[in-house]
Length: 242
Image (cartoon, rainbow, N blue to C red; front, top):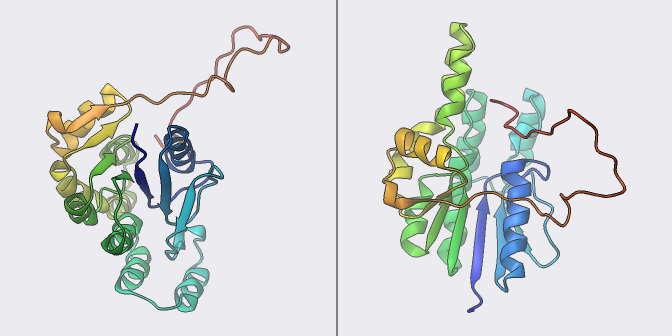
């Protein structure tokens, strides 16, 4: 099998976030184990990767590390060589938005203007820049689930007008994702349920989206004979915000 140079884009990669740092770590390690050269291009917070995976840090403002206006202002002021993306990110956050996906995409686009890879994975930024990247590099977009569903559930469970308006502002990036997703030619999602939701909410062509199920490492998650089983107990995993 030919060894490929693979880039994984991840707009944020919290080390203990299932769809963020954990997913990126496991994906990059698995591809490396198959003999490929893998690089992760990530915004903060950064992932904890296998020693054989290269990490390129894309230093965004990381404004959601704090909710203090003073701390956010200090982050912005101290950030050197401010770009349009930095200014847009700061102002958008002050206005209640979540611009990280869009600004990360611009930084990734700039990086890929000077660097080419055999395959590029994008971990659900679905940003405008992905349309350009798709032209210059083979792109696979990973959509864990359409975040339109998160917004739907939040609005259904709260009747406050002010809260609803704040949520609509926070999720305003969905307008971008709804425009970009139908134009991406290769999309991967982890379940048939997510595939159906993505087709419905993002107007994706069925032929453009494939299901690759998530899995667990059975070398770790397996029965241990020295551990006694407790009756009537079950472990579940779920999105913490839905």
